[in-house]
Length: 398
Image (cartoon, rainbow, N blue to C red):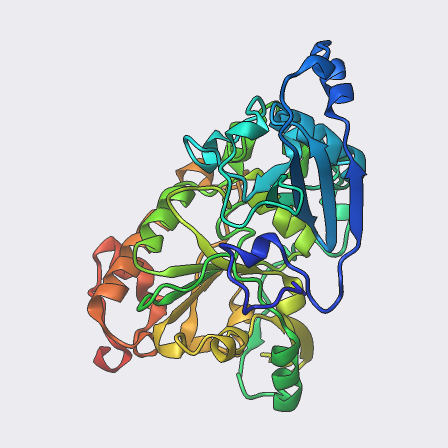
């Protein structure tokens, strides 16, 4: 599970999180001069820069401290230092929380000197040095470029079960309550007042990810090059449109390691047009027992929206939509589930897929109606988007 205190906000505390399990500290007395010699052969020892700068990176449960840095140390040199401790190549690293004085976060490029970073309030140490906190995201090369078929913890892409789903069937409510209480949520961006909730599956709903494709990609920019081809057509525009009306959450059926890789490599965490409140991985899924229509019992994991609703009272079945390509994930919350056809890049319609365009139109109509979402039949969404049927309540169906 994502072990972060949900009472912390992303704007400040996410960049310096120390929970009950105190993270280990990787302390590096950095010597950027050696890296500068490696990169461009210059002698950095002659620099006149005397301003002491310390960088503190949060990486998983570790804190990596880079101290004794000079103001002309570049971001690329910092990435080389981080590579020594994490084995993450510089081109795979995302430094979340660093902001340039001019141009903001998007201007934190490899050539930027640390003197050009924006100093946030209370960011000086006892000795007067400047301290910058940030989150390091990325995956070591030996982990990212593996065949997903060799790993059982990767996405479940098998066909949806032929299940007779009953939300009250074989559910241990006490276990679900305990599971909910133990599940921690890492808030990236706090909920906005009055916004309904849109929970989105990732694999084959928003994208079709391939680590082998990334291995051939020479682009170092997130979401560009071959990585862009993994997105379902219209994905970024869809999320940008929905973000105007809904708070967004991603709930993936994969492990956190792969979820972080996908969101980072596809540039979904740094897109200026939309933001996610938080993301959940497979450890937040709950196991239940359902019956096939032939009577056979099947154990499977589902995405219980009660976890979110209990922790965020502003959302409930009346203002939540859960979009997924697997209807079995709606087992505990059928009234909130909206099924979308799975997307595969190498299967028709491929790049001609227009599902997200239609879904964006439908979700705009839904929020404009002012109705309680559980009163609407989401099964008609494609007809409504195509103009074949009006948006209507379940009670209005003939």
